[in-house]
Image (cartoon, rainbow, N blue to C red; front, side):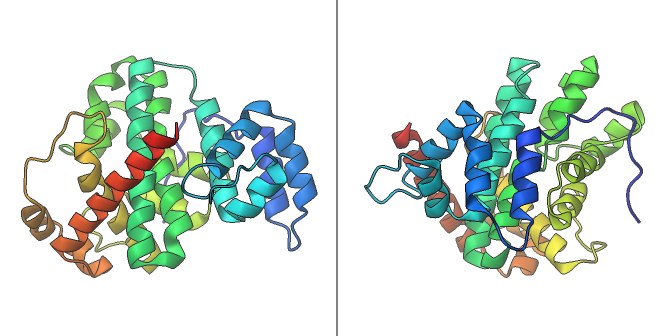
Amino acid sequence: MPPKAPHIALPPQPDGVIEINKQLGLSVVDLKKIVAVIQKDPALTAKVLKVANSPLFCCGRSIDSVTRAVQVMGLNNFRTVVVNVALREVFSQGDSEVLEKFWKHSELAALSCDIIARQMVNRLAPQAYLHGLFHDCAIPIMANKYPDYAELIQKSLHYQENVIALEEERYFTNHCTLGYFFAKSWALPELVCAAIQQHHNESLADIEEEDVKLLVAISQVSEFIIQDFDSSGNMKTISIEIWAERHDNAMQILGIEPDHIRDFEEELLEKMNETIGSR
């Protein structure tokens, strides 16, 4: 059963992103039209080129055109970069402390979700990245709407207590439901939208669609991994083995053992160092 739409205004998707998604949705993609849309926005052009020249894609040869950048990144990665830039633009106004925590958490979640998916269920890697990036997208919306939401932000970002019940009691909605509708309004894949709605569902038992269950399980492992790296201040208080035992559903769904989590953490640290080194 679909969730009930909240009575909160959602930031609209920028026109440029709408046009790019429209072009990417066609049976035959016109690369020239996509490049033309990008080049109208200098900030987006700069970001696309920066990512294309990062260690993730660049093989030592400088990429100085949007056309070449799209070719090197591929359409899925290109779409992700565009959405990331657009999301930052939409959430550029508001409490700077809230936004800093939100962005650091979201970008680390996107990176770690991508790492986990590529190792365990590679076909879902693009959706896993988007889910990690957008799973908490409603938090800055709620923080801007409700002055007292600041005291719930840490709980919302890290599954502390029953934050969904607290949000429902105060605001008659929650950041999972609001995030679902925000993601839908931005034309994200339905699979990603559904996973955003369910990402605080730790039992996983009542999630019917298998791919949604996989994305939520990936997200839960990701949340544990990034605790030591983001700006929450919530360093891990339990061992990987204890966490894995408490989250056996997620471990079984992904078919992983505690040693896999150590591997994910190691790769995340490597990727973070690459990113820092490329700035």
